[in-house]
Image (cartoon, rainbow, N blue to C red):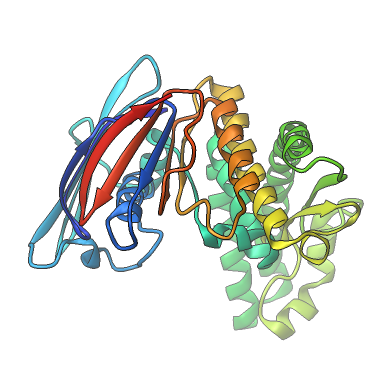
Length: 357
């Protein structure tokens, strides 16, 4: 997937911008508060229907304006599609090829985007909830039936938890146990297959970026898979009732990555942890590309933050080798790669582009 044309109007501190990114690496440089991250935020918004910096969409409209409009022409190499959004003080409207989009999942399917910000580097060390987000992003995009089974699981889980808190009889709770167990087995199989495929890409990439270390990626499903989950749920009703929620199942799943047999956060330096999370998220794009012959767009916001020049070079080299479209921001432009890198200079919301290579 590539962005062929991008246009933002009255968005954040950007009055109007229209650019045609290259199919490879695009570097966006300028001082702080110049509009670099706003450009990536606009792309992310068109992919996810939400911002990665605020939960209030009204704040994305340029000060003094009544509305903001966003447009992108995207292509998978054979078909071009038009994606647009309009934000006002009252609502937001998204359209794909002129037709209204009612579900955010439709945006993500049509326009897959992977974002890495300085805060992304904390995902592996901030707890299972955040690591599950990494896993479920990949499952949603690669395993086409995952969203449906996860929705059924989430609904059954919510119903079981409500039944536990309201004091329903065990036989009533067991109705939800059966549904949870059935969905959980499907999720387990999807996740196991996905992590196995991801591991085959991630570990060789880590060997290139961080040589001399032994890495392992493990999926923990949230229950002892040597046991029948339905039996576990039945046996845990009384204890679950005491605390008011279900303690066992995919909602407790985890993605565990170790370096030399130790937890990443207790062994690796901050710089090494950043390279690992970058490799993990890039591997997800590469797996998607292997599966569908087209890659999501990669957004790198301030990728160089707290990384030395050698680490920056490793990231840019890996992006170039993965042959994905990437838009990356920074305070300055590093040495251009051999590929046809497109450079955008931005100041006060105004963009100018050049090419090098």
